[in-house]
Each structure stands twice: as C-alpha cells, then as structure tokens.
Length: 90
Image (cartoon, rainbow, N blue to C red; front, side, top):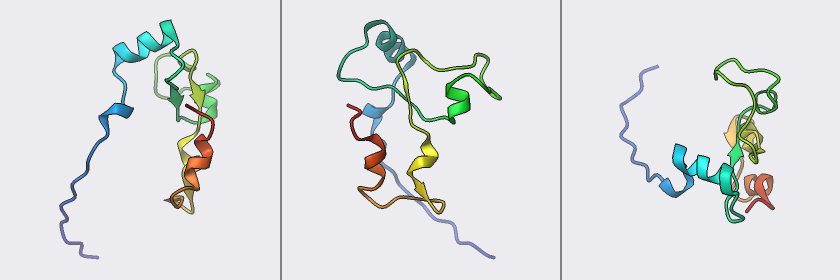
C-alpha cells in the first residue's frame, strides 16, 4: 500500500498531566479533588509482574483503571461509553 503523508495537529490538555513534584505532593497530602490513575495492566499495578520499571507496584493512593478497558474491537469506545469506566472518580 502507498500512503500519503498526513499532517495532524493536536491540542494537548496539559492539566491532566502531572509532574514528578505534583505526584509527590499528592502522595504526601492526598487532596480530595485529585485522583491519580494508574492505567497499566493489573499485574503491574499490583506488583506481581514488572517488565519495565525498576520497582514493582503502584504509587500509594493510586487507583487502577486499565487503559484497554476503554477500547472496543481495537478502537476507543463511542463517546459516553468509555466515561462509564471512570464514573465515580473525581
């Protein structure tokens, strides 16, 4: 197949990203308005298996929501359907 180059522009919502300092502050203070999500496979979150990072497990207080749960047949679920996965986290 011959694909044509495509230029794609995205807008990144930087408010959903956390620096090391923000994460460290979260683990020390646990503010009620922040939920730290770990989207890795459950085995990695639970520290059972760790093929990449030096230390197994998760950041204390983080909740595990596996990123593949918002996929359906290899594509992101339609708007609204994936938000059910995160209902109650805020």
